[in-house]
Image (tube, rainbow, N blue to C red; front, side, top):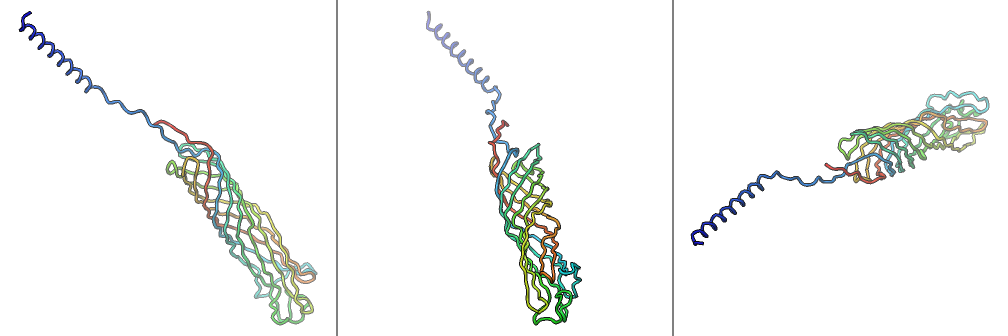
Length: 289
């Protein structure tokens, strides 16, 4: 075979290889872009049981009316001018306790039930007077003169909220997947202790006094609102306000035998501000996006 023929064959082969390489490169450039596999992300879900604790402060208010009566005749006493038969007084103090509940999430809405029990340091005091006249009068029966320094029959009243609890519905909207604004309301109950000392004078001008106490477990209602945020899938923190009303009731009866008695009728309301933290049972929900 002649050298010129071999040269022609070699040049033709190189040209064919070059053309094939160019076509392959063109095919690669024309292929569409392939996306990365979808990532796995957490979904913030509020549904489930939870348990937690809280602490805060309460601004309570008690309004008490005193009805005096003659313990011999049983007839009511109409106190003279200058008497103090009604007083409203503050019952403020710290609170602490725990709560348990369950939430249901539907889209951006969260509904739930919650119950709590609280220790309370709320307490207050007021003084009342059934005023005397120059001869003693109806507030110091049997006296024909007024002992030195005597102003009448007095009642020093102390009151404290020993503990309270609530059982409430909750409902709110998620302003973001992790932040809930809610309203709440339902049943409230608590124990109110009333202590006091009734002081006066007997027919001989001698000072007499009696001290007593009573406790009442009251049932009332509460309403409020709060904000709660998810710190992790299992931990949330909240800030909550409640208004509580335990109603009106006959709270105590103090008696100086043969002289004067004092019946106490009271009501109690409370403004509660507390911060809390909850642990929600159950693990994270994972979905593809």
